[in-house]
Image (cartoon, rainbow, N blue to C red; front, side):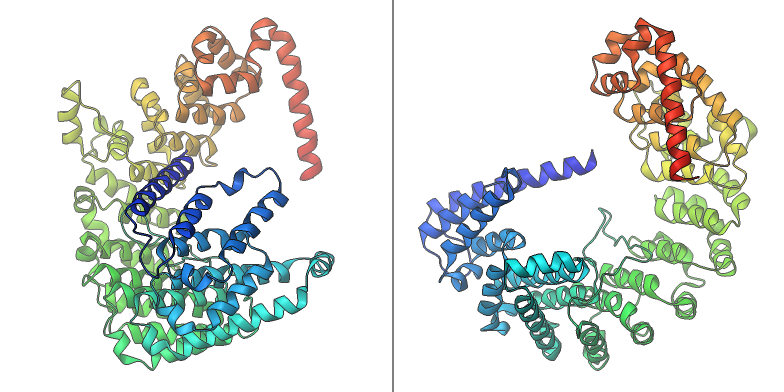
Length: 588
């Protein structure tokens, strides 16, 4: 659902962009950058408005793309340095044939310096580097038979070799001009793209930001092979060159330099781990937390790529005895989260945990959700300090007393202490939202070694509150965790099933609640499934009036059950036998 919303928003924004550019064209403003004539400008806007995915066949799409680039023939230099033209070329390059890509490599090679420094041409250069690298990687990873068929359709080996030569040329050029390009906004991003492609990093590795403004790092992102034979060597050269530029390290608090250094660290770590360690230790003299958001992001990367010894040095020099103020700082708290997540040894984690333990309530009141979630997840991952974490969390939310403990899950998911909850519940119109961090914390607690207290609190929760929680987009994942947890016993799952009796219509008619019902169905015995369908059949009109209810009814045969329960039961048994037989074949 979230992905669909993002796609729709992106399409709306793009439609607004095209509308704005058409309006600008009527005012005889044909995009910034180099001048293009009105006819070309309007043509580019028309083809950009075509949805490429709507073509019925690949052949139709290829003809369309070929025609677009044919219209640009002889005018490429002007178009790619124009605001609208640059965007159009970027959009269509991934669909272009090898011959068209080769044509653009020749055009851009005529003046690489200008293309690197141009505000619009640099974007085309980045896209071309990425697309050519992807084509080469696809060729390298495909089977010999596939390669042979591709080569028979075009001058395959010759084009691949020319692509490699061009990539080497671009890579060597940006490395040779590193001392100049570091300071230019556009050329700086060209360097990043080259490093990402040459090291096999996913594109935009230092641009994946959450709404809070910090970087989201995978512990060990997958690297694909370098498309260029000398690719790893060029990455090493770049790492060595940056160490010989002391003036760069004075600007680690700027977004431009910080972003480049992040990319260099991520690229170098798989190519030359010793060089990566050398760069990190050099950076420790310059990267000061709490100075800027850029420095905090750089520190996150340093933590994520550091080896165990270097990680220890980072912890001692930058975090030890400073965790309390850093965990409350707007930007540095993300570094604390990264430190906790990448902590590999129990001893180190216990040091961090003990330093932060007295500050749980302060972290809660300052809404530093991420630090508490990271601590909980590391307690679960390293199998230590789980009891202490749970007890301190109860104290932070002011529900240590026995009569308050039943409210603990509600307080956590709504991220309020007991006093705030009491004041809010007096107001009948008050409606506290379920928070994502609160939901993540409860899910983490359910995977602890001994989650009996949190299980008991969930099962003793008021049915109205439980139903509201399970029908929430964040809270529904707690139901998934409860039913999917290996440490939650069958008796507790049965108690949850019984507690939800009378609520299955409400669950199935909710988008998020229907997901929980799907999980319950997977766990349920045949007798329990019959009970669910019996309850739904009594309100079939209500169930079928909602899309989620209608889908559930069709999949699980509500109409068949209502008409002939015995027939439904026989079909269900046959289906379960087939699934068991298939499972035995797949995993004997």
